[in-house]
Image (cartoon, rainbow, N blue to C red):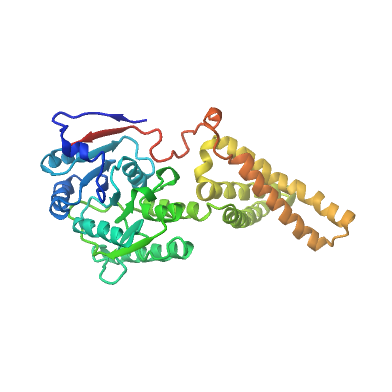
Length: 414
């Protein structure tokens, strides 16, 4: 749900209306902000100095701030020669990536340039990003720190450099095809053709929206330009350990988007459940509990472990279809039914089909694994329902909402 408010002094002149029907090559600069009031005036000044008059331009700030950043933007934009829009979100769904998706939806130009509001991404590169895209016929142009002429100089300290390098290596290893031709998938500075972006297919989580665009959007032609990552103009970095965990969860969600990859991940998560199961069994038997009830109780530890990993790594985007207690109960029933079903299945294979005990056990494990995977997908994490059936599948308070849904967005244009 969104609402639009008109601020006093808002201009209704041809400059503003021109942004609604962009000329060829026009650019919308999308800037997600969170408490960046000290950087706004300088950022708009540098954009004004950098973007030539022949390149029609608008700037869209998508703001999740808790300080006076929206008011600072509005005041600083009064003297800008291009329209400036502020979309302030009451609820920052999807984090920085969700903010970028909101900006993409609001963009009215042929090209969209995404950049940070802290001046670590130099505005002087905006015309080059768009010009390179036009000359190359590219759908996506990435500003890269890791190609010749680029530099990560603005990364503060060896720790951040190491984290950035590790994240780059990990993403390129996980998505070699989607990221072919992109040397800096962690870049937050890029230009994309509006025609190449389907905002409804993006499911951002955290701050690495370029990865989301490249993997889900699959642009046909990608090119790069080098850039030197600058020092922050003012304020402090918003990178935290929490953002790092969100990034890892996002990677897991992207990598397991296909059914085959999801089944492999399901099996790996299931195998990891043996660790808490065995630890629990050891602890209970040490306490004197008989091995039969100890095995039953220890199995529940493995079930709980698997459920938590599935919730946060594999089926995060499907949690909205049922309440958490309903999902947990259904998963526990399926996981325990697996034990009950496996022994009769082994006996059937041995007695009726003459299969040896060892291969029968292996075959039963495979069969029950497939049944458990299909059952978990179909009965625990139901696919998205149509609007008419949404009543029972409404998201609970514990479940994530898609970026841009259910949040109120106030729009102000200068």
